[in-house]
Image (cartoon, rainbow, N blue to C red; front, side):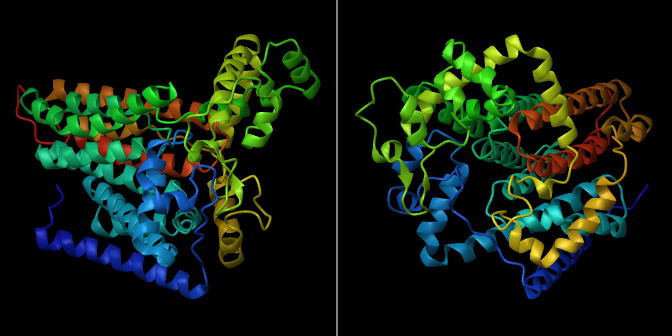
Length: 465
C-alpha cells in the first residue's frame, strides 16, 4: 500500500505542479502567444449593455445560458479598459485549477507523485489545453470546473463533509448555467450519484448541500418559462438541431417541403442567420413590449447580429418542429449523421472552427506560434486507430481491495453504467452540436470520471453499511 503523504508533503506536491504550470505559461508568453479576447461571439450580449445594464441584460437574455454573459459583464465592470488582462489572468487561473485537479485525481488513483506530475503537466502542454486557455470561450472554464467538481466529488465521498458537497453542487450549478450540454437532468444525475455512493446516514447532508445550487438552476429554467415560454436554460437549441437535420436536405427538397408547409419558412435560412434574415420570412405580429436587448438588430459595439432578438426566439419554435419532422420522416439519414458525429468526436478539437486554416480562425495567432507543434501532436494522437478504454476496468482493483463486497458491487456496476451512459450521451451531443471543441471539455470529464471511479470503492466503508 502506498504511504499517504503528510499535509506538508501534499501541499509541496501541488506547489511543484503549479510552478511547472507557471513556468510553461511564462515560456509561451515569451514565445509571443496571445490571449484572444474576442467579444463578438454569438452567445454574448452587446458589451455596452453588459457594462451599463448588466442585471437587466442577464434577465432578458434567453438565447444561450447566461453564465459567460454574467462573467463578461463583471469583468467589464471591474476592469474597464483592462478587461482583456483580467480575463487572461482568470483563464490562466482556470488552467491552474485544471492541472491541479488532474494531479489530485491521479494521486487518488494511487499513482506516484512523479507519474501524477508527468500526467498533469503533459495534459497542460497539449495544444488543446493551450489553445482554449488562450481563447475567450466557455470551453476552458467548463473543462476546469468539471475536473474540479470530480475532485470535490471524490473528496466529499471520502470525508463526507457538507462543505465539500456544497462546493461540488455549486460547481455543478455554475456549469449548468454556463454550458447548455449540462442541463437540469445532468444536475439531477449528479445528485443521484452522490446519494447512491453515500451511506444512508450521510445522504441527508448530501441533500442539504444540493438544495441551494439546484434552486439556482431551477430558478433560471422557471424565469425562462415565465418570460419566454421555454422551460430550459437557453432557447437557441433548435437552431443547433438544424445542423444535423434539415440542413442535410438537398436544396430542392428543402424548398419543396417549405412550399408544402411541411417545414417552416425558417428552414430555408442558415442556422447562423441574423434577425434581419428572419424578419424577412416572419409573418406574425411583432411584439412591442420587449426592451432593446431583444429588439436591436445588431450589437453595435462589436458590429455583429443580435442573436438574442425576439424574432429568433419565435423562429426557434418553428425550427424545433422542423427538426422533429425531419427525424420522423428521415430516421436513417439522421442516424447516419449521428454516426458521422461520433466519428468527428475523436478528431482534433483544435480544428473545431469552420474557418480553421484561415485568418478568420480564432486560433490563427496561436498557430503562428505553435502550429508546427500542433500538427505533430495531432498526427501522433489522431494518426492511430482509436482505442476506447472502459473506465469500468479501473474497478477491478477496487473489487479486490474493498472491505464491503456488496457495497463495492453496487459502486462498480453503477459507475460502469454511468460511464457507458455518459459515452452514449456525449456521442449524441457531439452529433447534435456540430462543434468539435466540445470534445475538449468532454475528454477532461471522461479522464476525471475514470480516475474518480477507480477511487470511490476505496473509500473506507464500515462492514454492513
